[in-house]
Amino acid sequence: MRKAKAEAHQKRITVVSNSPGETQRLGMWVGRHLRPGDVVCLKGEMGSGKTLFTRGIATGVGVPQGRGVRSPTFTLVHEYVGQYPMYHLDLYRIQGEEELEGIGWEEYLYGAGITVIEAAEKMMEVRLPEDRLDIVLERDGVRRRRLTLVGHGRHFESLVTALVKQHQ
Image (cartoon, rainbow, N blue to C red; front, side):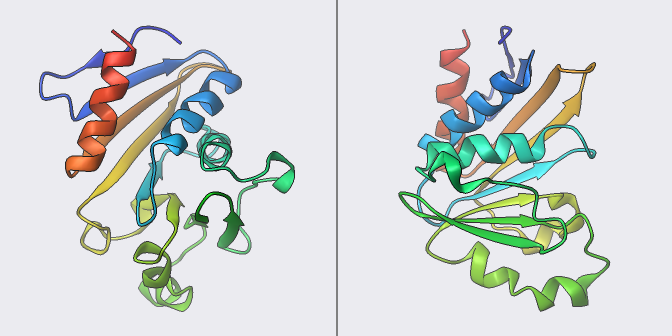
């Protein structure tokens, strides 16, 4: 991974990943620092690496690698068991608020597990927890990705600060 840029307030970092493996390893690092009740919001166009990053998070929280973490685009939610339960939501196909209500999103966001939301931009900001980790993934070539992590709340600001220190 290339050197990361960090802003002065250290709640935000942009990391450049040069391969799918690096993207997944960053997800693993994040996963190892998550705890029950945490919410991670992934944003980015299709093919930017959101599901790959989620696989890394799952490995980091102890989901057995043979569990086959995949995009839940058609089922909307997949649940995995690791050290903690992990709920993987994909809102890409959500058409509106009624459909969002139909999946019982509050039970996941405010449950006892870790929640990872792909296409989180489809959920109104007001519905997201105040304390969360936002990650924007952008393509920068065929294999290269630019990931911007923004921590909201003390726990996630600390997580981003630790990542900044690791990349200095």
